Image (cartoon, rainbow, N blue to C red; front, top):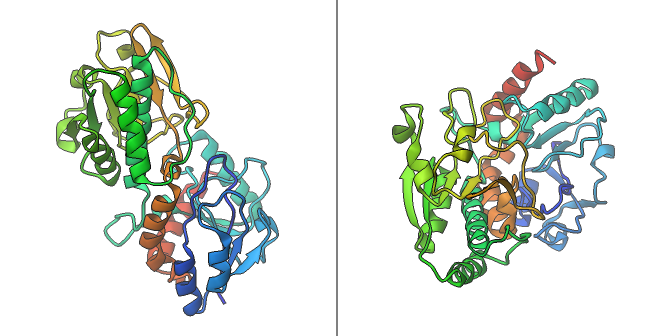
Length: 351
């Protein structure tokens, strides 16, 4: 019997989950065994999973799960160097030149396990079957606006925390923007036709932020892009890959500009293809921005688990998209799982 083991997330400020109790019940009805670890932070309570018929395991007990269990989580595992013998479903961030990714793949090589990277679960046409992109863009734009409002008062963005829902987030942001006693900022979204960019633009427009929307047509020249510097906020919603243009070069820090906040929603600072090379590390919920210039101010927001600001809504949305693929876990030799394994196998060749 196929056995899916939903682990507790171990990253700070990560309350999301990729399977709801309703989804778990649907998998069990198809003959898939589902184990869910207890979690002291998960936004969806364990009682729902128990009622759905899931087996309940202690928090963070996945290393001792049966050898045939498929371990399912969202964010990265603790970087403790231990070999990984299981099959894992998660966002590995290991296939685009990330330096930390090689260390993860070395752990899979040492343990003989397999990574089915959620970013590489794609259909026959190469489109991702599930993504948090919309909520990443929505929350990324929100924190970027928080940073802009704080800078108007001569401050850096304060720590952020989860919100009970979209309406609570919007109310909070309106109050912050109104407190500046000035006009709304202008924003430019690059990648505006994708899920991430759509979420970012929707958040901005809900708050009457003047928004310029760019996508591939507007960036096809490869740059430079002086228009970005003429906006208050730049929201990068393009994932780094070979051929991605540089949107804000290092020279922009000292150039004349209106730009004061960069929201790097894609957040790939350690990629060789980072299109925003003015910073070199992700930011955190405790310190949401890096200040890369003081006069005039330029803050970079690069939190890498943004959708968890709205953990219930983003979990429900993502889990609904992913469930049809999870229902085929008993057929790993075909479909999305075979395609994901091919990507893994290809990237393991140099390890």
